[in-house]
Image (cartoon, rainbow, N blue to C red; front, side, top):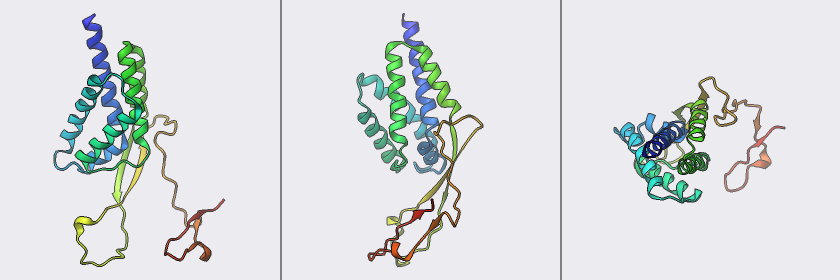
Length: 191
């Protein structure tokens, strides 16, 4: 019986690894060194920490998992995840943990395989923007915006890796009535 439990634990460990390696926000943070020079080591540590978190907390709610992952990303990688992937990754991890608790190795293998097949390769590039503030402004307070491009390694994505829409200049037009008095511009898509 202990062998079956250890096998299920190793399957859960593999599932956690697959889910975190397929998470674009974490990939970008690691590849761009948002966690400092030890970003890769932090990603390895994160996998073990997430696994331990589930083992110590048997009945986690989805919001608790989201909060935990969001806090780890903020504290370790100085990254606020706002791409909508946090609930998805949290749900994957929670589902795998429930499969682990039931001892359902087949479900764990299947979900890990599905996540691995849909894994995206993401790249982030800094956007060049004109500075509208004084050049004397302290750079420590500045925020760098990133443009993210996701590509799949040839597998079907089922919407997991959305491709960015082409920036067609005619796709968005700015009309004079769309500029409001406080300087904001309302951008509408052509239909």
